[in-house]
Length: 472
Image (tube, rainbow, N blue to C red; front, top):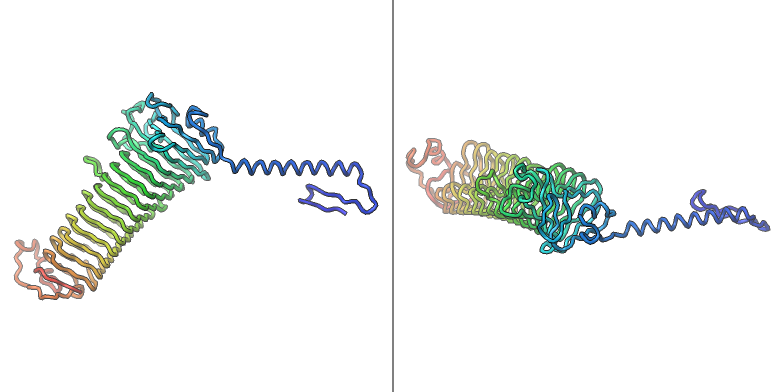
């Protein structure tokens, strides 16, 4: 009788009753058993090896970070010692010199410091516009944690050739999965022109947690098809905070962006969303030139505060913007939406120098909002704008409460419009019904109204010249 295990690889022979096993048969059986045991041992060793990650210390085990990266096996941990390490132009600063070139990471590994106050990676470039760290690969997982990344333009070999905004601290390419934890990225001195922070390209997936960015050109950039998530991060005194030009998704949770309004620079922004989709929750955007400009994108904001910006709080163009539980206050202008669509629910829009909400040939749905103390208008509609306004209070704005010009149309119900310099302008008569009659008397042009058209709108049904209290 013959019994076969694993196909034809190993045969175990059992002689018939009364039949003796020959020496040749025993030898064949022994050879096959030895081969099988060898394969089993090799399999076990491989499993143990794959599950093991070694720790490599720099500069104890290798003099440079790149040497440690080259020697590491996938999954290894590279531990940076205390002191100052260098990538880029060599310098005598600090206790250690851990590297002299841009770092290239093309395998799965962890680059771990001993904390942002103890392990500092000091960057300077030999070539204009080249990153300090390049992470590239299609199936790799890289973690960078507990380290201070510092850019110093003064140690560039040829700083006069370094173009403004030309290089990134970290550039991620391909489909790499990269995580950052407890990292600080900043620029030595007081100049933001030289290096971006983290740049995601290709189809990479990047997770950024508890990272502090300051004094860099762009804190975070996304291009290609990359996806990026940020949590518990701060961005301050940068040129652009977040620039999102990827077709993928940007997620930001509890991110604070402050102080990006830099004199004599072009349009510094908090979060610039240029394509793809962005979802932001529990974020604070302040002291920028523009808070959140959105174009050709989808953007969802929940419990986001946009305040104290020298330009527009939120500017949306040809985009879909959804807002809930947000505050837009103390900006030059509150929300400007050109074409596209905006939906605002349970939001407070107040104390902006210009209009609270300006719809320019756009669609708007405003519900349960408070639009208070803004400039020329609480809500203004121009061009072919359409708005549905419900359950909202429009109060104490310096100019019009609600103004619809041209062919714009505003409709709604259960609103209170009161205490504005002039409450209504050109809105449909069923949007607001006066609780008190409004006086309709002679209007002088141009003393009271700048054009005859404005005067006619004032005297049309639903256009009220005097202050009053109106409820739909």
